[in-house]
Amino acid sequence: MGPSGAGGDGGTPWPDVGVVLATHNRPQLMREALASILGQDYPGRIRVQLVYDRSEPETELEQDTPGREVAVMVNTRTPGLAGARNTGVLALDTELVAFCDDDDVWLDGKLAQQVERLLASPGAEFVTTAMRVDFGDRSTVRLAERDVITVREMARSRMAMLHSSSFVFRREAMLERFGLVDETLPRSMAEDWDLLLRAARSAPIVHVDSPLVGIRWGASSYFNDAWRDKNEAHAWLLANHPEIEADTIGAGLQYGKLAFGHAVLGERREALRWTWRCARRNPRERRWVLALLVLAGVSGEWIQRELNRRGHGV
Image 1: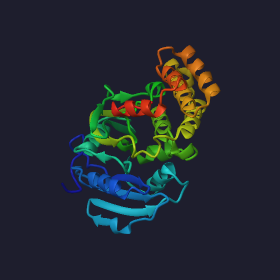
Image 2 (image 1 turned 90 degrees about the vertical axis):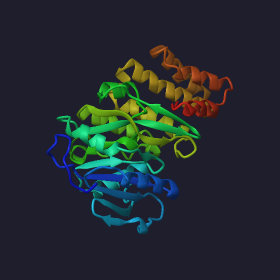
Image 3 (image 1 turned 60 degrees about the horizontal axis):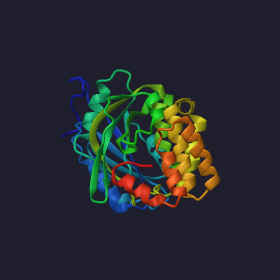
Image 4 (image 1 turned 45 degrees about the vertical axis):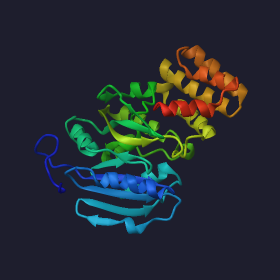
């Protein structure tokens, strides 16, 4: 389709969408992600901002095809995913901005369905989709089973199916209301959850509950085994989002993640401290049980791999 057309109300032109594709030393996977973006059947203009983080830019990927443009640049901000994403956002001038990780793909119809939903939702600033998790030769669909997500729901659960590769938002809302991606989190860990919390605080997130992004879990993730950084990020979330600490389920979730993370690192005293806090705050939270299993000798790597295989994380 061409770069013009009618939007969700039947008369409004489809808005321009800028896509920030941040990449770090995954050229083949990144090209698959890029092809899935450019191949969308979206009637409006798509401009991909391909941001190289701590890696050599491939300027040969630039293109100026009308309605499907690719610009190549390097991360000029904090090294890491958050700085790369913000570099891309600030370089764009499009009404809408989307993210796609360099090891994921957009599935058919993803962008058009999201933009249509956003245009049909007065006051909405942010829209997500469900996902398909690909782990080895097994695929699992993760649905949210709702079409609107509030800040209370985000405080209760990371809602992993709201993956960053599904994010589409109004650029103006990010710059003027809920803010850029936080660059202070270690290795940009949990930056997507922090962004969802701030966005939902500004306005409820609208959601297309169809699996419209393909997410690779496991070996392709840079964060798969970074337990010390994960622990620091979960403690940061507790300190910076009072909605989490105030909610029994949300707090128990964070306590359980910290218990498991410290157990994997062999930090027995800290693991037991967070296990005790988790069991007291929310006995039904299963992560404190997983932490005790790790302390008893069960491999944390095996637990994580089995959860990932089923489309879940710790």
